[in-house]
Amino acid sequence: MLFKKKRSELTSLQIGNAVIDWEKDFADRQRWVVTTFTQEFSTSVSPAMLFKALILHSHNLVPKLVPQSIKSIEFSQGDGGVGSIKQTNFPEGSHFKYLKHKIDDLDVDNLMCKYTLIEGDVLGDKLQLISCEVKMEASGSGSGSGSACKMTNHYHTKGEFVIKEENIKDGKDKTLGLYKVVEKYLLANPNIYA
Figure 1 (cartoon, one colour):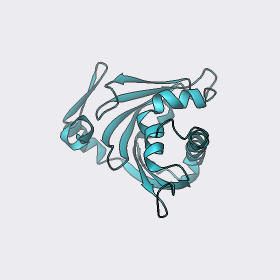
Figure 2: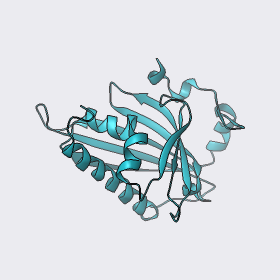
Figure 3: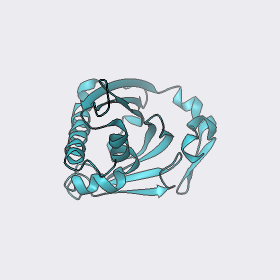
C-alpha cells in the first residue's frame, strides 16, 4: 500500500536531476550532530480532522488560511504518499523563498507522518536537514474530547555545529501559530474534514 512504505525500504530518491543514495549518504550522516526538540499542543478538534487538515490536505488548506505567510504548497514529486516531495513557496518579501520536504512515512490509520526537510534556504549554512514526526492522538475520554498533537524535530547540523532551542524558537512559534489558525478554522467549519 502506498501509505505504508517506510523510508528504510527506499534505497535512493531522485529529486530533479539529483539522486540521493541512502546507503552512500549514511557514512556522511554519521558526522552530523543531531539535536532533537519536541513540542505538543492540545485542541478540542478531533485527531482525525486535525490530521486531514494539517497533513493530508495542507497543500490546499494552508495557503488559503495564511496567504501572507505561505504563497503555495505543491507536489514536485508524487501525490502525497510516501516518497512524495512537497514544495512550500513563500510570498515575495519573505525571509525565505521556498522549502522542500519528502514524506518518509505516512500512517493514516494511526494518524502519524514522518517527513524530512531536504532543501530550501530555511536550512541555511548550518543545517543539513530536519527530520520531523507529527502524531495526533485523542485526548481525554469519550468522543469529541479533542486531541493532542506531538511534533518531534531532529535537526541534523553540518559539522560540529550544535543547535540550541533559542535558535529555532521563531520557527516553533510560527508552527504553533499555524496550527492555531487551522484549529480556529476547523472549529468554525466542523464538517469540512469530518
